[in-house]
Image 1 (cartoon, rainbow, N blue to C red):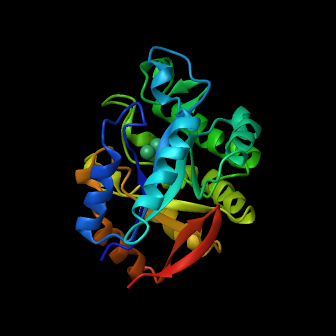
Image 2 (cartoon, rainbow, N blue to C red):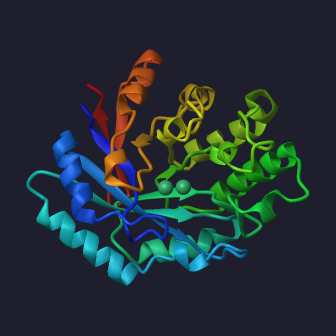
Length: 271
Ligand SMILES: [Zn+2]
Ligand SMILES: [Zn+2]
C-alpha cells in the first residue's frame, strides 16, 4: 500500500502539463490516502532556459489547491506544497514568501548554482565533474544554513542526472562524505528532513535520490524526518517504485515516514 506521495507536479509547473483532477483521480485509483502537490518556484535563474517556466503564481496556485483539498476531503488528504528552488542567497526571500501562505509542506531543492540551472550547459562549461559536484554540495550546505521555512531537502544528490554523458556518474560518496555529513547534521539540527525521491529509478540511474548510503547516514546521525516522493510530472508516475523505497527502509530498520500539516510534522507507520 502506498501511504503518501510527497512530490508531485501539475501544470502549475513550467515543465508539466498534468491536470490536477487527473492527479487526484490517479491517487484514489492507487489507493493513496495522502498527496502533496509541490509545484516549482525557482527564483533568480539566468541563462538560456526560459526562467518564467519556473515562476509560480501563488495567488492563483494557492486558492486552486485549497479548493481541491476541500473538494476531495472525504477520501484524499491533499497537502498544499511547493518545491522551492533554493540558492544560498534566497533563504530570507523564500522564508518571507512561504510565510504569507498556509503551506503544509515545502521541499527545498538546489536546482541552480550561481543562478545557472544544473540542466543548462552553461553551468557545466569549464568545469570538471568534480568541480561541478563540489560547487553543488557547497551550495546545498549554504542554502540549508540560510533557509528556515522548509520541511525536507529534495533529491539531495540528483546532480548526477546532468552534465552530459562524460559528466554523469555516481556520486563519489567517499569523496563527499565530509560535506554530506555537514549537510545532514545541519538538516537534523534545524529539525528538517530529507526525501527519498524515486525518480532516479525512472531516469535510469537505478537508485533513489539520494543514494542508499546517504539515507542510511541520515538515520545514523539521528535524523527522523523522511518523506517519499515520485517527483511525478504526469499522473501515471504517481507512487512509482514506492514499494522499493518501503522495502529499503524496512531493511535498514526505519519504521516511520513523515506527514505534514501547516509545516508541522507527524509520523506514520510503514505497514
Ligand atoms: Zn527538483
Ligand atoms: Zn520536483
